Length: 241
Image 1 (cartoon, rainbow, N blue to C red):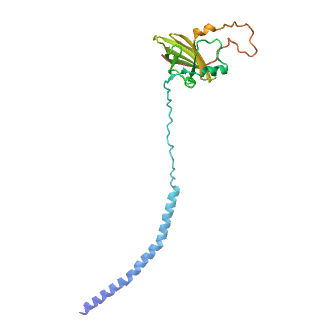
Image 2: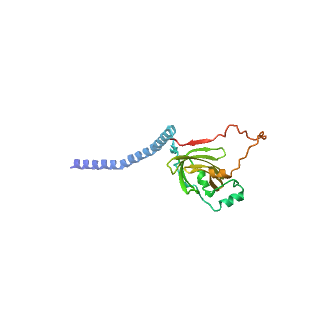
Image 3: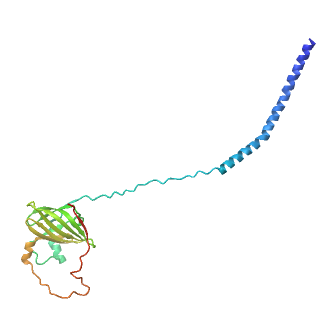
């Protein structure tokens, strides 16, 4: 019995010793961790700094936005200009006042030209011209254009006559004047304008009152252009057959 009591007392003493001595071990462990932790943090920070310093910095490259420039040239489609002249009641008065009406004109008809439209004529364009003397309208298609350095145009056209035959027309269109010839089955007609106001007459009628002037042979004046000098260079466009 005494022996059993002694063992019980010894067990209690051992448990008490373990219980009271364990917190000290825990405290010592915590203190050890606190002492070591700053060193660990320091080493980790050094590793991070070294790693960042030695690692290559990523270069951000912004790729340029690709732009595609259009190089397609829009071709101009042939235009139908329509009627280029109409009867005008005031054309004669304007021409007389301007002093540009020829004296030997005969059987003429006074018209107003669509000067702006005629200045735009290009190869392939079509236009209509009614001869006032016969009231016949003829359609013409531009076959060639010569452009002079000053911007004037010589326009060549093919005219469809009432006899279903092709005739020719040529006219010079300037910034403020038009003159030319228009050949159809009924004859050859001449036209001229001052600005948009002008006249049309049959060439055969002009010869009735035409006064032929005999040129007097003389030496060219100083600075005058030699009539036999090379022609002015022009830019030509033609219709391809």
